[in-house]
Image 1 (cartoon, rainbow, N blue to C red):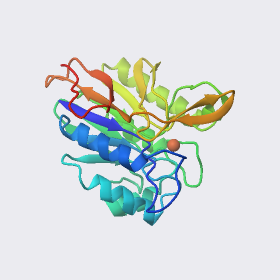
Image 2: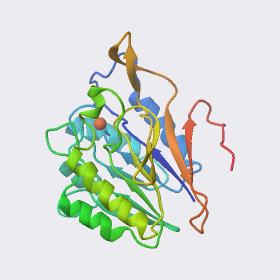
Image 3: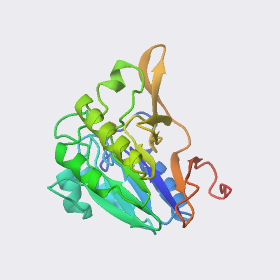
Image 4: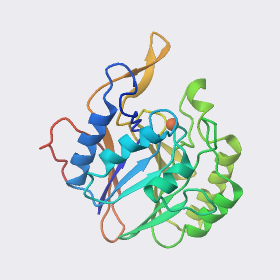
Length: 259
Ligand SMILES: [Fe+2]
């Protein structure tokens, strides 16, 4: 079983500005084409829209995503409008949040809506954490949301990840699940525009690369760099064993990873 994880596509509306020389729409077209050839489905963990989840941004995003030949599962990010995404893209919801499960062979993809309206940082409510706890069972899981739960280094990022209370609650739920033998393949997110791996409550966490541009510092000043678009590929056996996470760079449409 192979799925793709794309994030932070940041698609602008038609004719609207984006970062200088960035081509988020072209990048998303390339990533979707590449991933669709190998993956059974594609997860996009938010910031689908460039800035504010406007109708024109979602019209441009929809136009591109419509071409995907496999199912696409969406989670909202801080630059999205979660309610609008539910309406426009039929994103499943629970208590009006985009929380849902995708049942895959030998694995449940558990998608959580970590956004809070009008804010850059993220949160999970007590009800969401309770629901997550109830969904972690005998079947291995991948838990996905926009906001990371790990420190990223630097005040700029660490003030806009999940808030401290949510991190503490998530840590409690995840460590309890691990303690009762639940297999969580990974907690996966986006938001940082950097590819990062860390451990959280006994589980690996993965921050996928943005398909649009990477964030970093130039001479100490917050900046971005362009490059070939990237995404994460997750695979596992039909028994649920041998979960593998890999960064895929779309530099040649003929290039295929080995497995
Ligand atoms: Fe974000």
